Image (cartoon, rainbow, N blue to C red; front, side):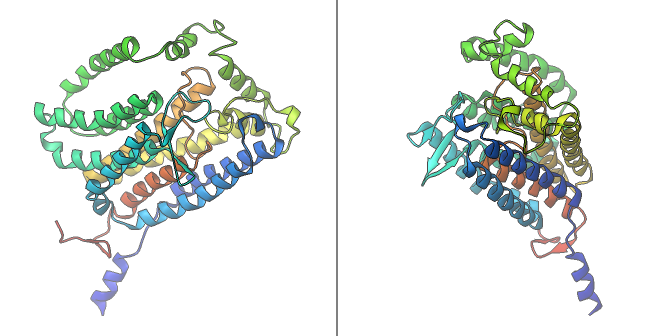
Length: 386
């Protein structure tokens, strides 16, 4: 009886409540912002109606349930399913090169598919698959990773998702995958020789992309950052409006239920430029609050990587950190006009059902590493199993 009671104690589930509350708070704020946009009618020219609010609310609920379920499953078991998860994600990505794909309004990339009336962005699913599969690969090969052949295989693993989304024309997501890859590699036992060589490799890749991959519109989006005011009616138009909208909220904002005429319209204000709308509604204080919550989420995920019970858990958390941090920096950088407009949404805040659920799923993986960091026995994992 005493032994059975000990086992029962060991099955007790511990959840990183602070992290779960923080991401859900962002999701609730997102729903409120989209409700405000729909209610005011300011974004009807982009077809933003009640369906967006419903999608965001349902996705938030599904995402939260998904994260909680994943948190109960041992991440080591999930990582071992990479041979199922990766082919599914690659198959969905392949569909973006077929007649099932379409280009979302205002986007440059052909990164969406429509199946049975539902829209889906496969790259969001691939983010989960890549974090799991690369974490598993790196954890199994960390001791040998500095050998040339092993390093080549790791680089090839990272190049696959970057290359595929690059072929779609989704350069923003390609950068996100590169950030995930870099975060995990830096947290491993990589040799300083490779770290010294990395800046030269990156510079070479950027040069090759500039001359052989980027179109004129991509180049202009970057060049205007160095020459403000050179194209105010073209490439700078959206960012200028975003900055004006952000500043218009003042200290305390205009509130969620102001008249339509009081809000400044910004293209994609429900999605990539939702931070500019948050600035109008909540003002400087509210915007600062959102930044603090996002910073807390990133730091919490990073901290969880430090207390993970093994290298696999550490790499999963660092992959999630690279994903979230790069999303936040690039998105807010777009609004502040210090980064080019490349279609990267703000985690848990921008509209998008696939992105919301996939982000929650990744948080679920982080929660799993937290809840299993000191567990010796539960229904999903036997300590004696190798």
